[in-house]
Length: 295
Image 1: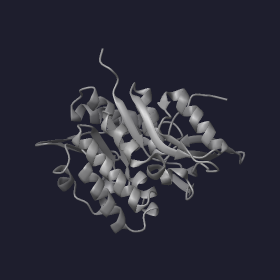
Image 2 (image 1 turned 120 degrees about the vertical axis):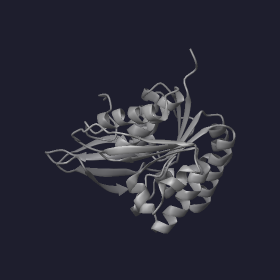
Image 3 (image 1 turned 180 degrees about the vertical axis):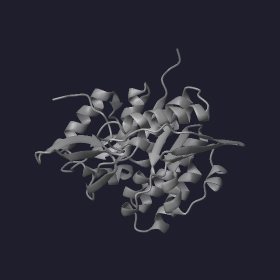
Image 4 (image 1 turned 90 degrees about the vertical axis):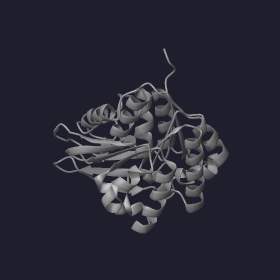
């Protein structure tokens, strides 16, 4: 039996607050990086999450959850007196959600400086897969963005599968031009890009151009068929209709399932189908992740 794939996820975990009917708040944990790390670990991969947290109650609970899920905490920097970023999620009758964030002081905004580019580069170059998103880029400052892209570029040259989800969140960027500049730089460093039609529209990007820069490109489009490009091959994969309870984390579920399927030898269309199935499951329950009941 071959060893499980090793996956490095770089990004920001968040505490997730949800209002109950009685007005109280339920606390969970999410954020695209955390969703990816946990889903990959649940899928059998050996996973490290590179991030920063504080020493507050939410941070301590998150560290406990990572340990319980089998996600390595070796590259989690704990910032004294820091506090984990958090967000309130409100979901409408169609399953679409609205977020309110409190993350401006999140220790994850300093993760590259705190961990050091050298440590990140070593971990990335020895992993089978590195996963990063546009949200990660957005919360870092320019020097850290530059350092992270250099880490990704080096890892790709060493044969690591570098996976980028542009995951564009305009409110995190100073301007659309800034977002486009940094996402384009990350695309140039990646080997796999998993995007959405919304990402492309927000960035005024053309899928065909990205397809010439990376080994694999997949573009999802909600209930419409997903498009994919891999070298000289291209195609579409239909999406089975599903009623959504909450669309939070659907893209992360797709990404994790796609990557694990590809590492295990699935074709690109087969991996897209696996991603669709994981996304269908994700939208069937509230929250970015379905957490087992714990005290």
